[in-house]
Image 1 (cartoon, rainbow, N blue to C red):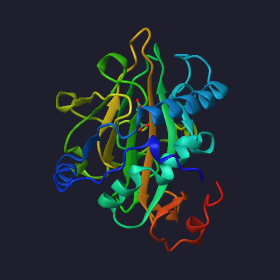
Image 2 (cartoon, rainbow, N blue to C red):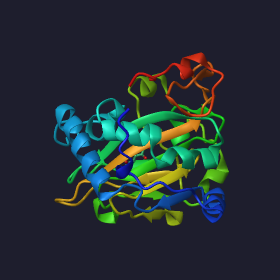
Image 3 (cartoon, protein in one colour):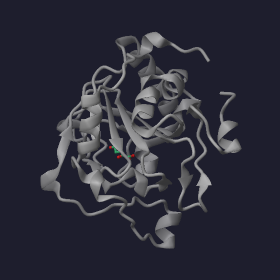
Length: 260
Ligand SMILES: O=C(O)CCC(=O)C(=O)O
């Protein structure tokens, strides 16, 4: 692997940050990418995005308009960041010594992508156990209320897992799994390009549409989990994702993506 350490700013989370994370369920990490790293990631991600995605179409789904999965297969700087960047050790400080990557994707709301994404928990999609998986969002653009930033409800992770019963048709269509939440408690996560947001798998979050005319809102979305985390909805099979730190009892995880 050709790791570009100059793309990332490495540091540990402080004990104060860890306490805040426990209480509020989220943390913002400023400047986790260097200017060079941000540039490179934008370049690689846009090449992948432009090869697969068309202009926003309100008739299309979130998946079609806004999501590109497994971006680390196509973007070497993202792969380095996902597997060996500063988030890995931060995840270990929160989750424990054994960590795997659980998801990599782009969630891009380009200017004029006016579709909101309602309240949900990331562990509502593909429930993982143990319940300490982390979502990380790395902003590739400045993001605020004008271009569809994320909103979350501080402390809402303490409410635990919310299970939504979807019909078979909704499951087949991969419909969004949206829950009720109190908008008056929501806080906008305004971030600068190159910052990261980390939150607990039960954190309630949402985003509004990007109503700006010319400000894209590009986010790199990476999840990390305990290396032995299993998929509750899938006969408790292990979530497949590269082992990035420590050990796992699952051979299929040990062997997963070791060659990319
Ligand atoms: O990128 C967004 O606007 C929302 C994405 C999100 O919350 C998710 O994919 O879980």
